[in-house]
Image 1 (tube, one colour):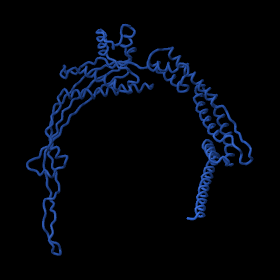
Image 2: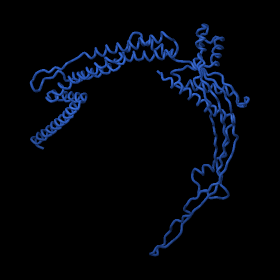
Image 3: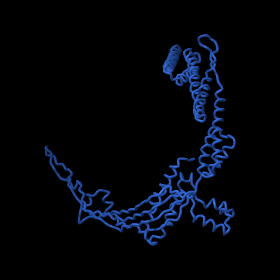
Image 4: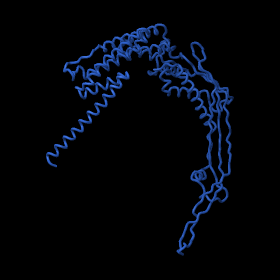
Length: 432
């Protein structure tokens, strides 16, 4: 390729790129103009700024911004003026995002502002306001409202519910201004004090099992405590204690365990022992259904290749082909079952008032099932599916011990009680 041709090709490419850029700008401006006419000022304004960042002398976009920005300010002033009729806290809640948006838009404008008019050559400056100061003032006022409300709440009561309310107010403060006064310290203190204590009390065994399965009430209490402790959602709001835990700690202290809590101060001991709510209940029935075995006779049939045969084609040529036949196999499928059903009642009681927060009867069942099969007489096992063959070759399974079955059912029962308590926690509606 000659030098002249290379030059011509480069010029053509530049012309195509320039034409594409002009086409993009023209399309984008037309859309911005349509948005302006429809009152969609934000998108129109953003498109105008984008075009001027790319082409600072784009006359139509300059004119668009000189119309859009004053209108944006006017409509924002109207919205802010209407907020004066609202309660101050509500007005601030709406004013703060308004100022934040205006500040963002003004910062966007300043990426191209001020600009030189492509029409007159004069410098064009649009109105600028101190939205940063407006925003800071509104945040400070809103933070003080939440801060004072938290102080009033804490002065009226020192219970966990009050601390939860104060925590929410103080969180609103630090979300607005992270280091406002001593809000972070108060918030940390309220978060700690808002955690309630739930005690797992002694259950009663009314099942009549007479220790046949060991101490079911101890088993249930231990399961509940373990699951409450492992539940991350419950742990956010509750400490879990039991009288057995306290007794163990007191014994440790008597023997001088340095890691055990110091209960010399009666107030500390009283605070640790006192639960806000307690779970108690009764195991009222343990129903063991002994092992039962059922059987059913089944048959499977399959078409398989059983051999080959010789045949002759129409032209007299000797050939061989496969021979298919139906085969079948009869077998007996055995199913062994054994189950335990445990029924209990539980109550969730508020300790200070004695108010019953929740009460119900829950039932949990554990069913064990074992399956195997045996071929009848002299059936052809080739007719059986892989799944059936696996059952044929399986040894007759042994059911778990009765006590193990009861333990499995108790585990399911404790899951249901914990789920009810988790729902109770969720219904309180205040979290961290």
